[in-house]
Image (cartoon, rainbow over all chains, first blue to last red; front, side, top):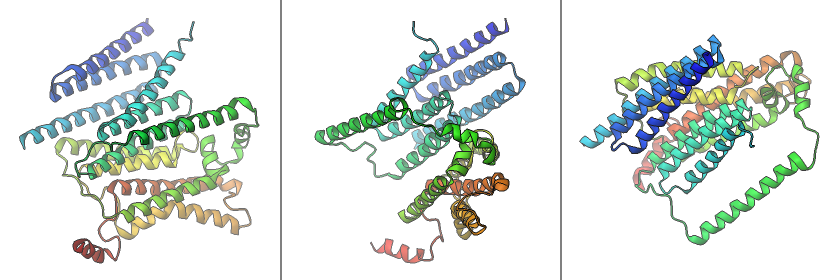
Length: 93
Length: 320
C-alpha cells in the first residue's frame, strides 16, 4: 500500500518534470518559460523525493533527500531571479 | 525478451553519445559549452551506475562544474565578438573525422584485448588484500595515496605547472558587479555549506568515496561563487600566502616522501603505523593547493602585486 502511494508520488513528480520541459520548449518568451520551469521542477522534485524516501523507508536517507531538495529550491529560485533580472536590465538599456 | 533493467542504462549511454555529438557539432560556442556541461553531469550518472562513485563525484565536480565554469569564463573573455566556431575547410574536417575514427577503433581494440582476449592477473585483488596495511579503508584512496602515491605526486606537479601557465598568460580578468540582495542571500548560505562539504569530502575519503581532488574542487566552487557575487579576490589570500598555498600540495608530498628516504625507508614508503595520518596530512595540503589553483585559473592571470616587475609590465603594455 505504502509502495503504491510512493509510486504514485514518483509518477506525479515525473509528470511535473514533463510538463515543465514542454513549457520550456513551447512557451513564447523568457519569463513564462522560467515560470514553467522553476515551478514545475521544484514541485516535481519535491514529489519525487517524498516518493523515493517512502520507498527507501530510512529516516536518515529521507533527511538527506530533504536537504537536497532545499538546496535545489534555493539554487533554482535564485538562478531564475538572476536570469530574469539580467534580461530586464538588458531590455531597458 | 530484453532485460528491462538494461533499458535505462542503454538510454543513458545513447543520450551520452548524442550529447557529445551535439556539443562537438554545435556552431554556437556558448551552446556547445552548455551541452558539454550537460554531458558531464550525465557522465557522472553513468559512473554512478557503473558503481564508481569516486569517479562520479570527480566528474560532477571537476568535469562538469569547474571545467564548465572555466569554459564559460573563457567565452566571456573572448569579447572580440566572434562567438561562432571557426569554420574549417572540408578536407580539414574530413581528416579530423578520419583521425577520430582510427583512434576510436584503436582504443576499442586495446580495451577489448585487455578485458576479454587475454585474461591477465588483475591488481584489484592484491589492492584489496593489502588494504589493511594501507592506513585507509577506501581502496581508491589507498591506490591514489599509498600504492601509487608517485602518480598522484606527479598529478599535483601537473596542477602546479598549469598554475604557472595561468600566471604567465597575463593579468587577471575583470571582476563582476556586486550581487543583488537575492544572490547575496544565496551566497551567504552556499559558501559556508560548500566549505563544510569540502571538509567532509576530505575527511570521508579515508573510508568512503571522496578525497583531495573532490574536496579541492568543491572548495574552488565556493571561491567561484564568491567571485561571481563581486568579491574579486574570490576568497584567495594575497601575495606570499597565496604562493605558499599553491605549492603546499606538491611541497608537503615531496618533503614527506624525502623524509621517508632519510629515515631509512624508500621514497614515499610510509611507515605502516603512520600511514593513515600521513595520508591525511598530504590530502589536506593537496586540497588547499588544488582549490587555490582552480580558483586562480578562474580569475585568470596574475593578481595585483604578484610580480615585482608588474610596473615594468604595465609600461610595456602602454607602449605597444
